[in-house]
Image 1 (spheres, rainbow, N blue to C red):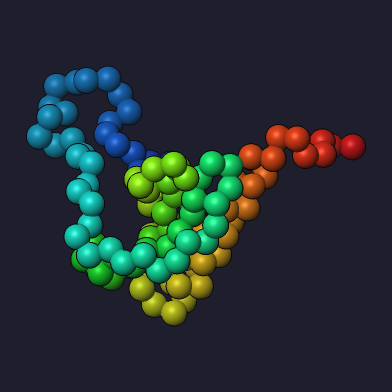
Image 2: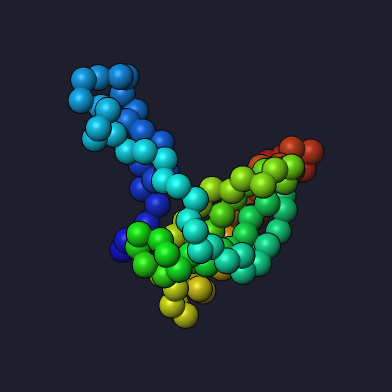
Length: 115
C-alpha cells in the first residue's frame, strides 16, 4: 500500500546532523501545489483544523490530501495522501475524521480520567 504513513512521512530533511554530501541530494520542502482545490473543512479541534483538498497536479498524479493546520493561520500540511478514486475518497474521509477525533481527545485535557 502506497498510502501508509511511514515514520519518515513529511520529514523536512535528513534527521542526522549536517554531513558531507547533504546539499545537492537533500530533500527540499516541496513547493505549494499550483492546482489544489479545497473540497471541505472536516472540522476544528484542539486549535487545529482538518480538511480535504484535491491536488490534480501533484507528483503522484490526481490525489486527495488530508491537511492539518492551525486555526489561526492559513498554512496547512498534508498528513495523508490518497488516490483520487471513489475508494480513495472514502479512505481520505476516514483518515480525516480519525485525525479530527484524535485532536478532540488530545485537546480535551479536562475530560474524565481512567477510573
